Image (cartoon, rainbow, N blue to C red; front, side, top):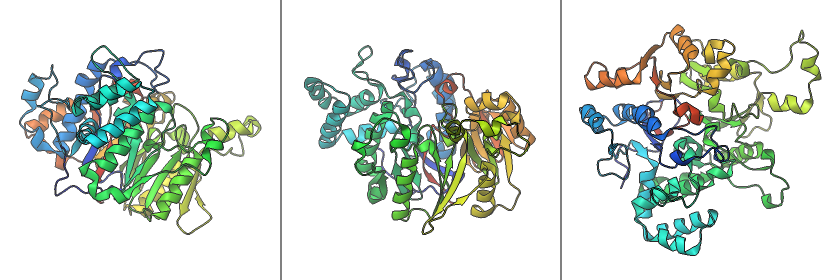
Length: 483
């Protein structure tokens, strides 16, 4: 059972404060069962090789997080862990040798913890079986299953090695999308796609029932549907109330960013704003509407924060979308619906004020955040995807060059495949190091995680990048130090 220690406090007031605790989910067997015919329904562009994703890529992520957040779990043990890596017992949450950290927290472990309670197990099993259309006997069999095994079944969809009883939820590795910590509140999200509905259900049960969040039950917020939502015609996203964590950024104690995107609707942003203002969670919320396109998906695929005054972003979206005076006529003659779909709008709402403030482009917004919200004493810098060079800007944005996780201010994780973006980091004074080399230095006391500054840590990415998400997506911060 993962229990809160005396240092745990649900608190995230920025994107770059020193990371102290987060929720993650390691790639599970469900990912290895995604088939081509269902890949897009399950929100994957391709099928991935599970063992390569685990051993050659994601396991490095776990090791690195432990060195930074919970070094006692790994320091001095790296050779031993690597020597037995073929059976991966250190990384599997159902194994007795699992690292079991209360800082790098595995979602599957929390799920198994709450399923040990018979009442919760009965209720959650009934709920999962209802949304997955299971028969009654299967429901009874699942109710009698060991909690650790049942947690695996709910996530992977597999009853045993060969028998699938319902679809997997492979997107659970993108843990940020099921909820977002905002100061000492937790906002549970409403996914846009049916493939993620079981994730949402599991998250609700975990946050409302696990002892880790016992002191924060009154601070767990759920986005409501609009009044009489069941009468709305059609399935248009703009008509649905949806919001995912990749579209939410906590960038200062009083200021939140919400994106309107392929996955977060205007209705979802509207309900979130009303809910957060009513509960006095923040004073200011900026809505960034990005083009409704699959290659952008969430706002954290087009920009993330590196330091108080440093951001990485896609330049073609950062610049103003309004036609300039010397544009060709086509800029003015384009179909209005298409223009609205492909433009970027930025509106900033303050509690108690009816009229929002506007920004002409993303760069202006980010500069305002750096200078005014975060009181940066240095000029704001922008590191552009692909070093702002066509076609590498778009190519590398597609492989998550802008989707970086800050472990501390100035120390970020990104994929090793985005060569031009890496060049841009170097030009801006950042040290670049491969994770494998850095782990050896940590183990041999040649480097100290707490002393690292202005560093881009390169993570292997052949399979992970094919899943269309970076390390910002693959993390749900629960606790960061205040800036």
